[in-house]
Length: 523
Image 1: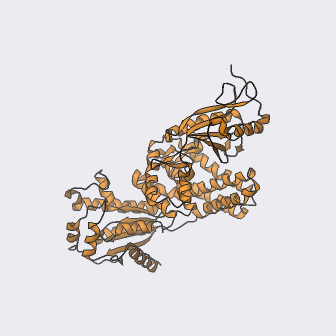
Image 2: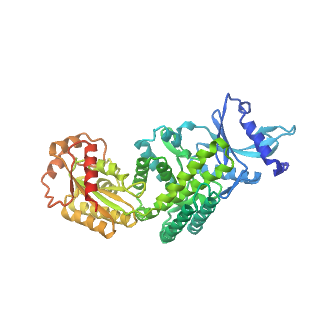
Image 3: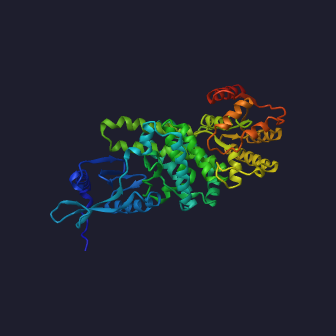
């Protein structure tokens, strides 16, 4: 029969002894043990294994204050994370008190603590470290988007009503925590954040319920920041999913994504955040998200506010030398949460022009420059056409896919998406030839109806320049070749009232010209 565990009265002393045991290389027969601390856990890296112990702490958002609660949390962590990263999570391991009073890892005695055992990976290859080293490039950001989309596709549905009620509680809990740290957060700013958050949440309620009915509120990762994503075999892998509260871990899929986007933005990686956002939309292809993006700024703000709350809570346990950095970090998250709720007028931009003028390159370069954070969504006619025929972006379509009636349908799809996104309060860029006056008129009308600022850009370059670019393209969604480029020389464009941009030079030259034209075009 298992003996009763020691009383909780000397819990701190027991944990200190456990941490000493796990920090001793002799426990594992290795030369060195590295230790990493978070606000809720202590992690020991020993050889090819990792042992994670919950700290005996209680916060407003989690409670690990008893051995039973920590055991349950370890069990939940193992179960949840095997869904996201089964190759990393192995088992629960007891730390036991033996008959002679000594502690043992996975011994036969009475458990006094529990740990989660994981396979070790290169801890320098988590995305926070890669970002610090300037190694989070566009290719990795694109892979990250696809990985998150695939993760959400596997995520099971969650209860909509419970989560929406919880969101209101998150806002209230944050406000209460900020008020308890009046030395960090001014009462005026706390009141403004609370009021703005409540107002936006009230407006979003019908949208969130509709998204729940569409199955887009799911049991996600819950803690999807850069430090919880590792690169294994060249691919991003999320680990350390939130386990202590299934309601907190659940939410709209865009709320789960919002943590990652917020983390990138807070680190000054707006471009990477925009690539992740667009890559995610491209991978999921859910028309509902064109409406759902109305909630993204609020989701990112709430994530930043929670991060500010969690960071401020660390001050109670922090060494004096660390308190200044922790306080600055908490204030940065708080300021970001407030800024993200600042209303902005959406913008609709069109990058038009014949094949080979660099429309798609310009659209990608412009995207991160438009508010709201993290920049505009980009929809491209070539990609929409491939999706319509259910082929990969680089797979060539037959000639009949370019019949006039098909192209008309593609422009209707693009216009509909632009209208939805703009009505949701977000900026959007449409990348297409726009050779016909009625195509240009339709997108302008959609932007006006949405109350969005509009900028139509028409790129021009001579035929030899266009042919050269088309001939040197790598794998791409465009099927345009030299024959198509020559044929387009005979297009009747009519009166193009858009901003004409010289695209005969380098991509940076085109970007500069486009930015100058937009600046001059603004009211």
